[in-house]
Amino acid sequence: MEPINGDKLRGHLEAMLLSTLERGGAHGLEILHRLEEAGCGLLRLKEGSLYPALYRLEAADEVKAVWETETHGRKGARRRIYTLTAKGQRKLDAGRVEWRQFVKVLGGILGASA
Amino acid sequence: MNDTTRIQLKTIVERAVRPVRASSSRKQKMREELLAHVSGVYEEESAKPGGDQAALERTALRFGNPAEVTNQLEESVPVGDGLLQFWEGRPGESKWRGAFRFIWVGAAVCLALLGIALFAAGLVRAWSREELLAVSSGRDFLPLWVFQMPFVLAGFTLVMCWMERSLRGGPPLGDRRRTGLIRSFASAWAEPATRVAMTGGGLCLFALFTLLHISANWPAQPTGRDYLAMSLAVAPFTGGWAAASVFCAWIFARSAAERRWHHAEWSSLPLGPSL
Image (cartoon, rainbow over all chains, first blue to last red; front, top):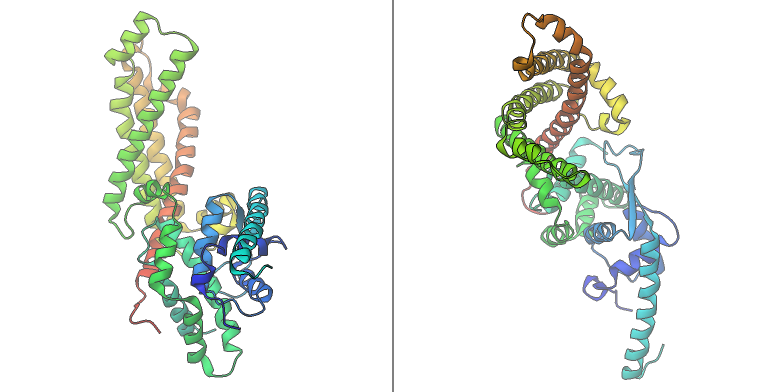
């Protein structure tokens, strides 16, 4: 199967990030690992693009971020741990409803119902 | 991970972050978080066969096109960050330019606060004709705000610059900032140059506040009153203000010194062509 790259992911990235955080707080790299795991290795995301999306979610109060206290030997570079907020959870729930509707409509048109 | 590798990882991050139009503090956060990310990626990649250079190349590839990341980072900067950009000034700007901006922004904030206070006072109790005349003619307020505030702001700014200069000579503040305000203050106090700046600045502010207090009350003084006695009477008050001002100046100086140190560290990275 062909990998799913950045262009195809556009528009769904934020919902996917919220979904990964439903499993608990995580830093950026851990979020990527969760995405890869859930996407069975078929997701191809440019990793630098992850953080702007997380910053947008944070500005919208849909995720909350705190700096970790330990740098684990990375010489001053700390990670931020992102967690889902109640607003983010509501957005995720709404996103799931929209997605089901989207798949149903497109599935009907393409003759390939999910 | 050796220092050379670390510099190369920082370069990967800096290619994306340097062109972003955002406040220094926001870019500082971006750099730190992205550096932590690429460091983690590099650790994963260096566990694979191919050597360090190949691991670095794969790290850069996974990070993505710097120009695209720059655009995405810039889009994530909130509109309100513009105010912070203005407050923080251009990275690497001269100390005097920064001090001048601090003074006039401080004066603007003080005048805005005064306006709000006067408006609120008018809401609580309607102004009498005499009070309104006193305020609008400037008989009561203008001397205080026009003649005293510039001295207070200028004094505060000079003390802040002195402290920032003393902090610049010490070790990087990065770790101090994480220890909390009080512990960080105690750590700064341990530096002799900073201790001198804090003590000297505090004494200067104390003298300034005492002089301003005397000058503000000058026409109202009864004849023959001993000004030394009056100064001693207000000493706890002016001393408290001076100590609080030193602490506030140190907070501003600390963040300014941190921004300068951070700018010096990252702006010296030669970006060169992408890996």
